[in-house]
Amino acid sequence: MRTTEQSAVLPIKILIAEDSATQAQRLQHILQQQGYEVAVAANGRVALEMVEKFEPVLIISDVNMPEIDGYELARRVKAHSNSHNIPVILVTTMSDPQDVILGLECGGRHLCPQAV
Image: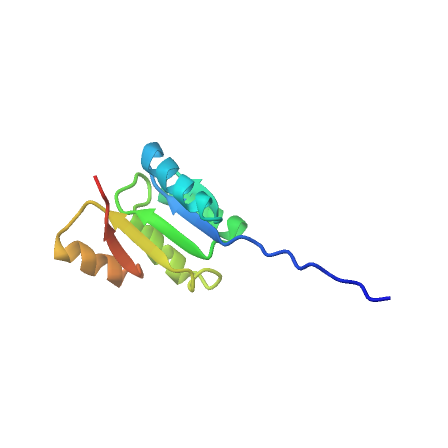
């Protein structure tokens, strides 16, 4: 007799680091509607604590946050051997080219302007 095993496809995990509850909920809703598993951290410190437990494949982070900003979050994620391969997308309303350069220097993959 032949048995059939169904392999469970796990959803892709995305971690959002955003201090604006409105922005975080909006992004979380959009991503969950597309089938992603989403966790939200209110700042970079909480996001760092969640990385090891949640094991995201992508981090989307605001740049301006209390405690640890998005730049420092990206630096720390990239410095840790267990998380250095996780892409970090930095989202901000800042538009100065130096902000883009700083984001790339700290390991961010992209610096995306935030819609207001």
